[in-house]
Length: 261
Image 1 (cartoon, rainbow, N blue to C red):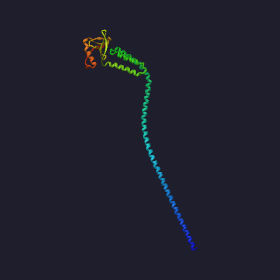
Image 2 (tube, rainbow, N blue to C red):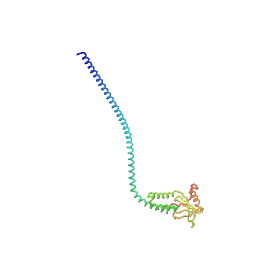
Image 3 (cartoon, rainbow, N blue to C red):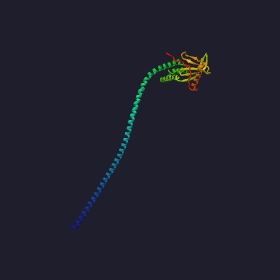
Image 4 (cartoon, rainbow, N blue to C red):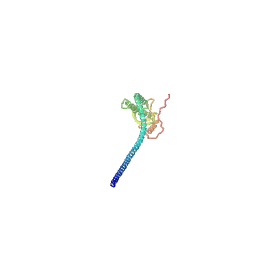
């Protein structure tokens, strides 16, 4: 082999060697870029995954908080519903009781009206037999109650209450002292007098000039004239006490003796 040919071979070898080295370098650079790209891709994926994890964690905490809040509301609603159920049960019981009362009200109403009538009959008879103080006013009260019996706009309960009130008024008459002005026939002449009532024990009168006095005798159902000097002062003082023009004091009054059987 000649020297010239050897040089060509060496040059060719060098060229091949350089080419191979460049190829190797190129391959190495390409591999590094791929590795870096893969690493970057993994990092990006990891960041994306972490972001998703953080988001899911936040959503989980929010859901847990909402769950706890809803649980508290549910517990409160359970307590409220339990108390509400008790109220409903009580109302149902009351409704049942009211329904029963309504069913009985018709029967009671049928029984109450005759009772009211009997009570008024008894009250009217009592007034007729009683000491005749303010008799017209008392009988007028009874007649007013009778007129309301057939009124449809007045309930049976109200009618019964009104009759009881009338009985109570009659009861109070026996516990007090009262005076009022009226007129009475004395010796064939109508005279204006002051009446003095002391409960139902005594009912007396005295003319406005103070000259004549009398008292009611329930046994004979008539007025009895009293001796002028015996009771005039006591009756006059009783009238003044009843009008609150004098203080309370003992009075000598014509009181019928108790009956013996």
